[in-house]
Image 1: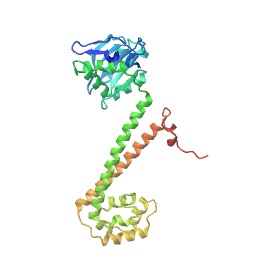
Image 2: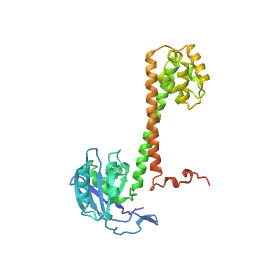
Image 3: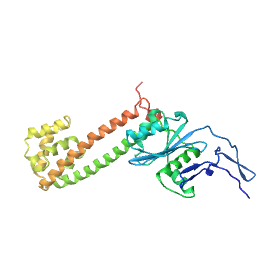
Length: 325
């Protein structure tokens, strides 16, 4: 059975000549009639200008094509800096802003600065999945891959498929996502350091981890080990000083009785007397405490983003902060 179909796949790019030709602009809607694929409606779309930007680390390329298939801006290069961004804007100023749709391929982080530059200025910007452009490139006869041709391919993807515009709220979510990833890496780094610290203490003062009910990873134990990272150093500390160290770092939880028991335990320890391990203990604790402070800053910034006036995250029922009535 013969199938007749006319879709936007008729739009193609002649990469060799660097020109874009569009046969017809149609509504991408089809119905099945008696086993045949036929076009439901064929109509000209509202005149729009599609700007495709190929993102790279140092230089970007951009071109512009109308919804009628006319090349309005030949591919041009602009730098990934302030001057380059304003070069792009100067090219786009000749068009009505509400008629312009800009497409950027989502490639790593190189396009984030351009996004943050264009969106606040009121431009309609879309992020395009690289899979879409890759599929479109494979459909081309020549299958050419250059920065200039890629700008046309991005324009073609914008014309054929609807995409959601990026908003300031989306940029805030991107920042939140980046902070979340960084927080996760920091937590993993801290966990590795805690495992290393445990192994060092097991060799130097194996009895210590059983002395504190909550283990060695607490402020009181860290304060003690930074000042006295070996059983010999703990055993030689004056009882009053040892008591003050434990009491001040635990907010009064550990008292003189605890200091007495700890000093006796240190005197009987079977741990290895190794100065190199003592250095690793103190250095590991300092790194863990540094990561703790960094995590506090990260989480504070994440909270500010979530609670910002433009955020809708807290409108999700399970995330709403309970209030006391």
